[in-house]
Length: 84
Image (cartoon, rainbow, N blue to C red):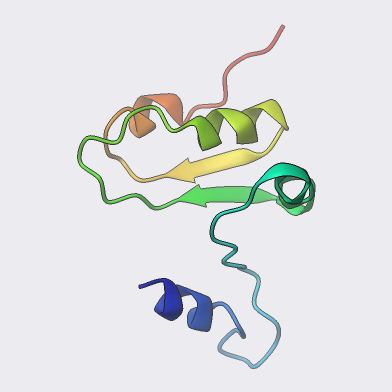
């Protein structure tokens, strides 16, 4: 599946560069660059019992909006928390 996702993000249907980039796992300084470059984080999990994914909280903490599958607590956690 990873190969199919990566291949689908190489170019759009019109041959222009893709607007979606599949990055896979990122860590450390690379993760900071990832979130700095990200407009929207997508978490398409298929796990029925997905616990609260830390990556969603990391995205929220950096001001990045999140779209997540309606599974586990992702559905209730996918609304950006109000920060006062």
